[in-house]
Image (cartoon, rainbow, N blue to C red):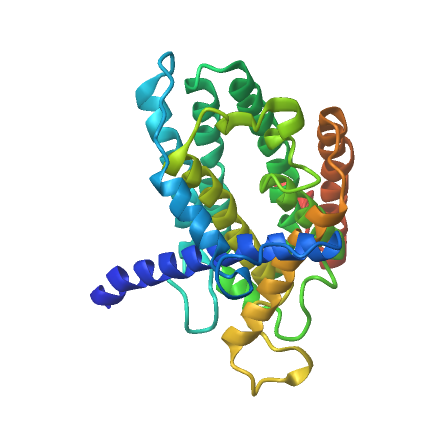
Length: 324
């Protein structure tokens, strides 16, 4: 058991790093196919080593620190942003036997810890002493805080239905019906808010190159810049896994096809969500900043509250009576 506590996280980190390398590659391929282009095809067979070459180039680039920056904060900001993105994976159950922690409040742990990344992004934007990076950091913080509220509210329906914040129990409750069916409204709100939390298109305003010269990480280079990019893709891994657990039944097999190993079903559902994120980037235009913020507060939040109300009514939860 003690050896697993040491080896397990290292293996998970290797899997996540491998995912990040080839998620970037396949994202570029998918966008290329969608736009009738070839995509990366020069480095390695079929271009499979292109992302590896890009990562090596980043790691060997000069680490530039601006003279007028707050050096200490500038150095630690990527770390503050990255650590929570990997730590949240501790509570994700990948199958009935592959998990690292089985917290009773696993869902709350995920939501609480992931919000810390906002601090790292804001520190990175401010410490650079660049008006464009500061604007990008402020815009990113405003967006992530705004969409974090409907994101959390959207999963309350699941918590009410299961009566638990434990992610394993949420998966077990979906043996007969996946929550994407009874909680479809919550699923739509969750998916939209999750895309915004990931700073993915069409909600990629914090990194609007045409407006903010790449946003909060404009002054970063080399491996520190790579850390910010790594954070985004690790969160993509985590959010796709969480979506699979909450709404797609986790490792539960559809149509009674239980002869296929549970981990295979989890991976297939997980990859479906990841492909959907790539597809969106290839097809959706970027929203304006005012449209993005209004959509969160005036559309997603009321719908999330309505979903909670409908769940309470259908489950006959005595919400009002609980206060008397």
